[in-house]
Image 1: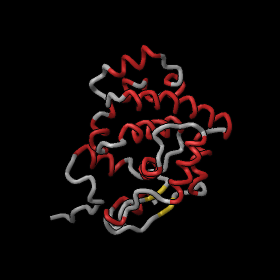
Image 2: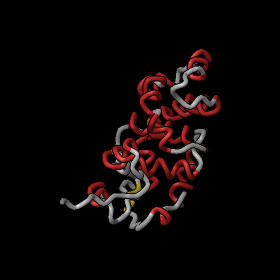
Image 3: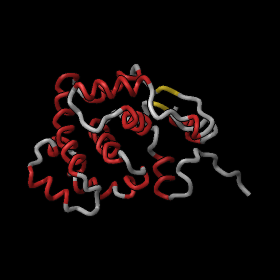
Image 4: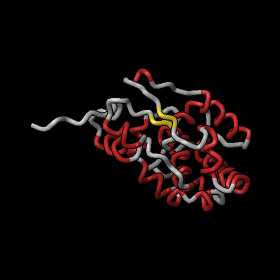
Length: 190
């Protein structure tokens, strides 16, 4: 019998969560479209489980034009109406409107900093912060870095970017390596 793979416990046995954990979570992101995707998904996750959002990810991708922020920035009230009728996504008017505003602000950040990637990675000094957590209960819900990121994004008029959402985003985008030290991904994404 082969040795079983050690991984973080949070994906449980959920196939979608396991695949996300094993292939994406914590991998450093340096692509602006991917950054926007994670910002959008983390914003919609507020008050919901990540599993719920992952299961609807394909629907979000289709509903929001493949996460093309330049298109989303130009959405009109008819687009909001279309999205509010789409049962495949989370139909929350505040979050939908926030996504449109965030797309507009995202473009402004790109113009100011050259790319969103250059802007966002400043909050961790340009490289992944490697944590050494042993169990899920060790994970913080926010940090001084996510506090600073949230404060600055809010200053730039982004919506749904509280510190807890920012920390979840940092985990997803590989700005922090929060795989537990016994997880096979800990060294791979480090």
